[in-house]
Amino acid sequence: MQATLIDEVMLATTVSSSDDDLATIGRAMGVRVFRGSEADVLGRFVAALSEIHADVVVRHTADDPLLDATVIDTVIGSFLKEGCDYASNMIERSWPRGLDTEVMSRDALECSNREGIRPEDREHVTIYMRTNPNRFQLHNVKALPQETWPDLRLCIDTPEDQSLLEKVFDALYVPGRIIRVGTVIDWLREHSEIAALNASVAQRPTLGKVY
Image 1 (cartoon, rainbow, N blue to C red):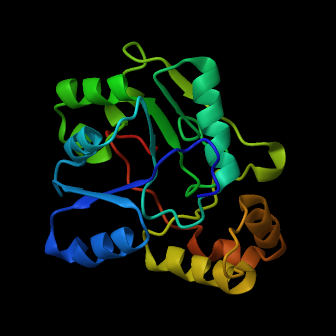
Image 2 (cartoon, rainbow, N blue to C red):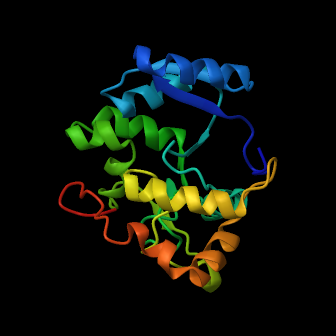
């Protein structure tokens, strides 16, 4: 783990047999693995906290293969500096989609679990916080100008996303080395035909809004 402000990594996956291989791989890599509800993702995250002492929780999703340690540390640092309940780089997007980093207090996550009763609250983990700014102190972290490209998709949800990411990895991946987001953005600006591969993909809205 190259992010210097993270103390421990936990894989919070499901009890479904389809995730057995994932759990096995996680343990083989030395990552703590928690298995919980497939339907209640928020409940799974809170249940995972029973096995770890953490006052601050950093959330990443498995469909973001280009997470950047520098971005992660930037968001965590902003959370600690601001003293807020929740900080992320996705309240108002500036980095490409797929660099999403969410940092929250344990208290805010547990509060969301108690009070968030909408299906969307249970599925999206932090949507209760993000849609209740009067209840929680929120902070948005913006990218530097050279890394600003909010319409670019670097996540993997569709075949078009996969096609783009395969080309990025083919061109830029070196074994044992993290691909920095600035490198990806520079390369895609020079290869606009690759960046266009998933440009028409529409993100599914949640509660009538695209986050």
